[in-house]
Structure formats: structure tokens, C-alpha cells
Image 1 (cartoon, helix red, strand yellow):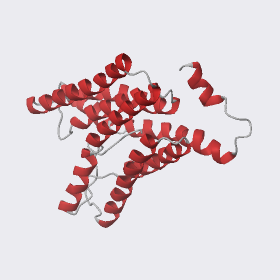
Image 2 (cartoon, one colour; image 1 turned 90 degrees about the vertical axis):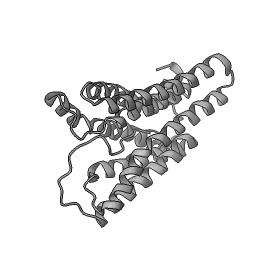
Image 3 (tube, one colour; image 1 turned 135 degrees about the vertical axis):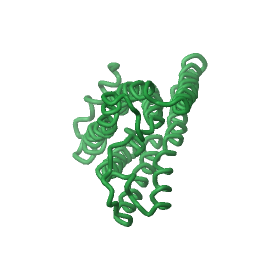
Image 4 (cartoon, helix red, strand yellow; image 1 turned 90 degrees about the horizontal axis):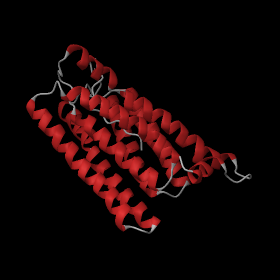
Length: 243
């Protein structure tokens, strides 16, 4: 963490009121904790895959999306020297790499090809954005815009998972594919980051998390409307994101 980022975290004005403290520090701090809990949620299923040496019905593609999402937001957090964005996504990146590599070896050829294509696509996109920023962009504001739009684009790809899950629930009229603790954590996490993004006037943080919180509320509503009689297993298909 650079000295400038450290000053942003600790050296606020002496007259900061509680509301400002809540929105600029407590909310994103709690968001980092909840984000870690969400990233850990597929870990049990992945460890079961490692133990049984069989992928079963676990979909490994969202694990690649976790890596891409966290990497894109780490790029944005580093460029803007935002310690909370960095702290929220670094554990997710490491966990995503561990879980994706663990599942890759037990996936069939089709799943491996999809994982490899997705990984290469996101690797080219994110590294390309980083190269353009480092070699050709001099203005900090332009660098922030490029990294922000890159992160939001990756996030839009990432939102394919919860959209497909919501569509499946509506089709089957069963919420067996949803797990209410994760839906609640998604909603609370999104609202915390919306509060932080609004407080620091960063719409790249506020707007995508507002969408994420909305998806969480929709999932909670679907769980209430279409109760499941089937016990849910902790799979990686339900969306988990940090910011």
C-alpha cells in the first residue's frame, strides 16, 4: 500500500462526523469481510471435488469469472489507490485461482475448453487494459476511466451466472438452485459498497453494486415465492462478488 493510499485510509479530517466515518470506512470495511465470506462459500464443494476426484454437478466456469472479476477490480483499486477495493478483491483472486485449478483437473474436455477460453479472453482483456494504461495513458482520470469500464464490462459478463439462475427458478418454479444466506449476503454486500461508492463519489463502485444488490433482492423474493423442498448443496453457480 502506497503512502498516499495509507493517508487516504487514516489521515482524514479531524472534524469527520460519524456519518462520514460510517460511509467511508465502516461500510467498506464490513464489505471486505462479507466479500471474503462469499468468496469462501464455494470452497467446501471444491474441497469435496478434490477429495472425491470427481467434479459431479459443480459448474467450474463461475470460478474463472471470480478470478477475472477480482483481477479487474484489483486493477481499478490499484490505479485509484483505494485500499478497500484492493482488500475486498485480493482474497477472492487467490481463492478463485485455487478453486479453478483444483476443478480443472477433474473436469471433462468440454468444461476444460470453456474454462480455458474464458480465462484467455479475460486475461487478454485485463492485461491489455493494464498495458494501454501503463504505456500510453498519462492522465490519472483517463486511466481511472479505462480501468473502471474494464471492471464493469467483466462484471456484466459475471452477471450471466445470477441471470441464468433466476431464469431457471422462474422456469422450474423452484428455488432449489438458490441459497438464502448467499442471497442475503449479496444484497447486504451490494448495499454497503453502494453506500461507500456514493460517499466517495465513485459511480464505478456504486452503480454496479446497486445492480448486484437488486439481483440479491430478486433472489430473496424468488426464494419466498417458490420455496424449495430440495436441500441445497453449496455449488459455485450462485453469484459471489466483492465489489
